[in-house]
Structures are given as C-alpha cells and as structure tokens.
Image 1 (cartoon, each protein chain N blue to C red):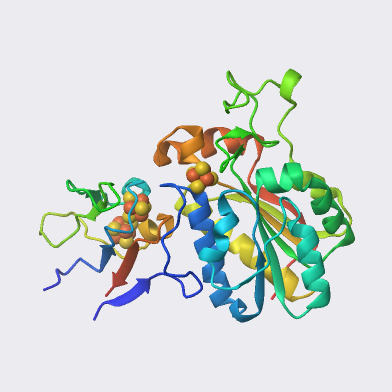
Image 2 (image 1 turned 120 degrees about the vertical axis):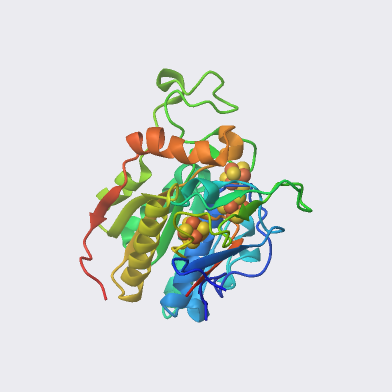
Length: 80
Length: 250
Ligand code: SF4
Ligand code: SF4
Ligand code: SF4
C-alpha cells in the first residue's frame, strides 16, 4: 500500500554502487543512508530509507536528484 | 502504477565503469549517452576517445569509435567529419590529453572551424598515470610532480584553454560547466546538447569544458571533491558561456 503523501521510490543496485555517497549528500529529504553490509566489490552501498515507515515528514518525491548525481547509474527512480 | 522515470540510458552499455567512486567521467558519459538518444543521433555518432582515464570510453558508450593517439582527438575527428559529413563526430578528452599534448591539434581545428564537438573534461591532473600536474592544475594545488603545491614561478599558471579557443575565429560555441552538483549536472547536459545541435546545424566548432572531480588523485572523498570544485576550481575556471556565435539553435 502506498501512503498518501508518498509519490516516488528509488531502487539502488547494491552491486553497482561504489559507495561514493554523493546520493546521500544530495537527497533533499535525507532518504538515503548507508548499508551496514558490504557488497561484492567491498563497498558499503547506499541504501534507500524512504520505505513507507509512516515516520517520514515527506516521503520520496521521485525527483531523481539522487539518480542524476549517481556516477555509477546504480539508481532507478519510480514515480506515481 | 508507478512509472519508471530514471533508468540507464540505452546508449550506455551494461558494463560496469572502471572509474573510481565519485569520478566525474562516469556522470559525463551518462549525460552523453542520454543525449545521443534524446537527439536521436546515436546511430550516426562517432566518438573519438582520448588517452587517459577515459581511454576505455568504447567499453561504455554504445556508438562507433575511432581512438586517437594521445591528444590528437581533434585531428582525427577532423578527418572523420570531412570524409563522413553526415556523421556526428565528437571527441572526449581530458585536460592532460587536450591542454598539454594535443594543444596544437585542438587550436588549429577550432581555428579552421571544423564542424566537430569537443567534450573537454577538466579535472586538473593526469588521472590515469597517477596524479601528475596538468596545465590546468591550480596554483598551490598538490600533485605528485608539484609536492607542496603548484608554484607559478616554477611551474607556470593554470592554462585556460577554452578562452584561448574562443579567440580563434572558427570556434562557434564554447561553454564551461561542472558536474559537482545536481544543478551543474543539469546545466552540463544542456550545454552538451547545444554543442551537438551546433554541429547538427552545420555551424562549426563547439566545445564544452566540464570541471570534473578526481577524488582519487585529489585525495578527497567524493563529497569533499565536489565541494572543492565549487570552492576552488570554479574561482579560477568560472562557469559560463565563453563564446556563442550560434545563438538559439533548434
Ligand atoms: S528521488 Fe529525490 S526524494 Fe527520492 S531518494 Fe532520490 S533524491 Fe531523495
Ligand atoms: S551515488 Fe550511486 S554509487 Fe554513489 S553511493 Fe549513491 S548509489 Fe552508490
Ligand atoms: S583517477 Fe581520477 S579521473 Fe581517473 S577514474 Fe579515478 S577519479 Fe576518475
């Protein structure tokens, strides 16, 4: 079920991610964090934290700011 | 139903970039790939990759390629465009490639007004060979060949190649952008789009200089490298349209 205010969502490919954390730094709503387990390349990949917990002020808007900043094209963005 | 609004562009192969985490090359490759699709020129594009970190661009961009010897991109592109005028020919060159080794070829191609597009990635160092000083290294900036910082008395000052090329009569459109923030990434895409359009309209030499972070050789995190571009590199190499004889191109 989608929450009323949540309009977008992203999918991060953890194996493509190189842990640069540029996405973490640019998301206007701080919805991206860092995983606590390594990927196969040996990086701690970025992780989407915007998943429908009901806690967020404002969920992911699907603005794609993270995706256009990701050097490794590891982020796909979906919008309602 | 959620709609996919961002995905890997079709002209970017599925291979994983060999570039370091946070490298600007990866972002610029993706922008080029998006534009090849948006302008519908992917099938007739020929890329001339450089020597340097981006030498393997042919592993990523899914277009025809003609590799050039170090720095000679503009000369190779000249030959390709003159023999195959219907193709969209662009070089992709780093600062070591274009502003040191290939200075002569680049200046003369611009001066002749060759109808080619140059994507000039300025990260201020020789990346692939391990971070030696490039002509574009900032004053005071550390590199392996300027320990303690570039000293203008000993090493000369940063070379502004784009300004030099703007003086050449034959150049039509030259803009300097950066890929250190979402806003600048969007601006870079618009600039490269215009550069391609200048060529598509047959107007002559177009170039986009993109200030690009090299976190590895700058010995910074990618986030700090992005800030460093803003705080230091753009002070010496300001982001602006340096020359525009084309005006609005459709
Ligand atoms: S799409 Fe926008 S809001 Fe959603 S995670 Fe990315 S930057 Fe944040
Ligand atoms: S920007 Fe891309 S590569 Fe960098 S941490 Fe985020 S998902 Fe990973
Ligand atoms: S050395 Fe610098 S320019 Fe080369 S891939 Fe690494 S970050 Fe990019």
